[in-house]
Amino acid sequence: MPFELILPKILDEPSFESFLIQAASIVQRQKTLIVEMGPVEAMDPCGMLGLLELGRHLRLRGHRMLLHQPLSADLQQLLERAGFFAQAQPIYTVYPPYRKSIPPTPKKGGDFPLEITPIATAGEITRAVGRLRERMGRPGEAVSAILSALLTKRVEPGGTGGYAVVRSDSSGITIAVSDRGPKVGIQNEPPPAGRPFFPGSRIRVVLPPLA
Image 1: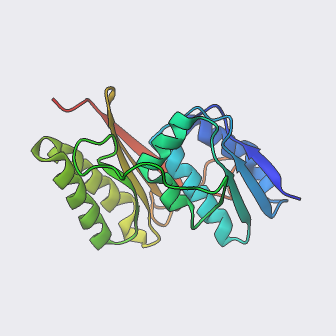
Image 2: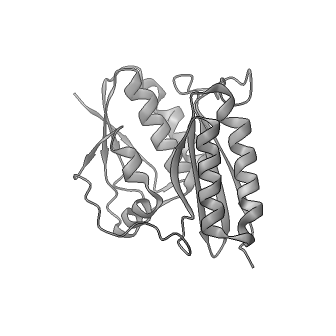
C-alpha cells in the first residue's frame, strides 16, 4: 500500500533535512511512496533540488515514486518557471497530470536566469554557465563565476552529476547546486546522521541583487 510522505509548509534546506530524517524508516519499509506537496506554500531552490535528487535516488533503487502537486497556484507557477516539473516527470508520476500552462523563462529578465539544469560532465557545466552568462549579461559575471566554481568542485569530478539552478528576486540572487553523494561531493563526507539511505547534498550561495 502506498505511503504518503507529507512535506512541510515551507520547504528549504533545513526543513528538507528534517523531512529526510523523519522519512528514513518509512523509505526502508515501503516500495511505493507518495510525496505530498499539497501543504507546501513556499519552496526555495534547495528544496526543489532536494526533491528531485531524493526521487531519482529512490527510483533507481526500485521504489515507485508519485508526486502530488501543491495546492497553491502561485507555487505551481513558480515551479513551472523554475523548470521543476520538466525535470520531475522522468522521476515521478505527477498527479494531477502536469500540463504546461505558461511560456518558458525568457532569455533575459526572468526570475530564473538558469532554470533547473541536470549537470554531469565538464561540457554540461560549460553550457550551463554560458547560458547563464548570456541571460544575465555583464552584470552577472560574478554569478556565472561562482556557479562554475561550485559545479566544478561538487559535481563534475565524480561523474554521477547533480542539478544547478539560479533564482533572482528582490531579496537577491540564489545559486543552488546539488550532488549525488560523497563521490561527487566532498571526499569521505558521510551522509548526515539519521538518513544514510540518501547520501546527496545541496549547497547554496546568496548574493545581493544586481545593481
